[in-house]
Length: 603
Image (tube, rainbow, N blue to C red):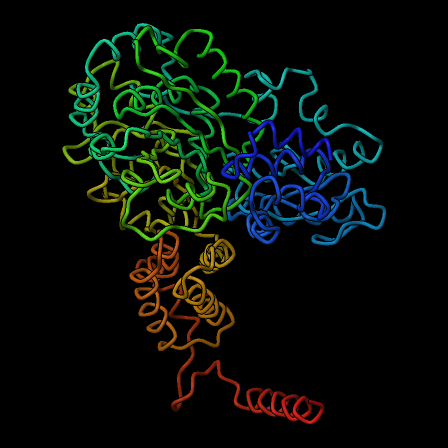
């Protein structure tokens, strides 16, 4: 099949580029046909089950023909505060099909999907790479009517016809909503040539020391010292090294990286070049979540501009011997790929299954080579640190949390969007700045973070030493159903677990059952005690950060808002839990026994 040969030749039949190959196949046929698998397997030296194992792991790969218009509606807690159900109903009514069941004509298909990085402008949906935000039932009916009449989704999302590689194209679909700027981000000083020339005129160790002295810590959630990570990567005897930008921004409620890549892409990309020089890497890879596919052509144009300026390729910025280039790797929908080792597995064309550590990526990462994986915001901060110096950066923030950071703010507030704040600001100050309306519960760092009380925790500082924050702040007022929010977060973790380890795979399901019992009014105190105990076990024994944080929605909300849980409990009389139905269990046992006996007789 000539088309398959062309796709494979594009990537030199490199099995580690399987994600790109699968995307090209799906973009050509609309899905991944079974009859292309033999050719792929033969040329890539893989088995067909190997290929299926990869694509079946990801949310956006398909192995059956799609409807003409596959519509993915973001199902998030924030969307549910903003009319999600009315939009959901309107989609079903207008298309004439149910979610999960394409219509008979093959025109429309409706699916829900987790957060797509648009919590500041929900409800929102995706049709291919096109984004539609701020939805209402009327907007939905109009959209579906135009599609039914033959309109192109791309033309509807981009009526002015802007080129896909332009900022205007991205802005036509998605608002950036930058609400406050500080000294570090969105400066766009446009002095990158001078900066790179300055950096490469110095020994790489100077760049390493500058970033280390700045006190910059990773902005993806873990808070590891960036300069130390780079130094560990540079210390390897292996000379082939990689820089990876983690742009798989899948934490519900987080969208700061999306805005940085839109409004200050060169700050991010130049930061990657600086990292490459500092650690002696030759290649940088941006792992871009598939929900941000509309950014890919625009980012590629920035990379081409950098090549034209001599900021990539051979002798970067005139430095003989410094060879460095960038490429973009599109993900395919898997929250767990936010974990750096799962991301590396995906980069290598595999399931996004987290690796057992050690070894750590700085020693054995992408393709087994030393790899530094850093967040989008981290790279943008590096560029500014190299411009202004480490002392300047340390003049902001606290002794343990240097600099500023970006917050993605959503929920019950007057101005959702992006805020640059200085580490050390109190939660109360942030809530006042964003116009929080009767704030009650605040989810800090998304579902994997901490649920705090706006009144009792208002004086806590947004800082790594007090209230760490990976960039997401969701605000809920007293009219909101906190138990429903906790359930939604827990169900999200159940769906997004890679399933490789038992504590996460089974433990999260058990936790979901516990919160369901509370909501149904059939739980007792023993259920809550069990949830806390099992939650601690899941956190301590899971293989990666997903399981390490997945019990937190229940554990932190229970700790801060016991008054929400306690009225729902019932008294436990006897050794059995109130939720245990003895008669139903007896019937189930007898039915299972009868089935077993019947199979035994027939065999």
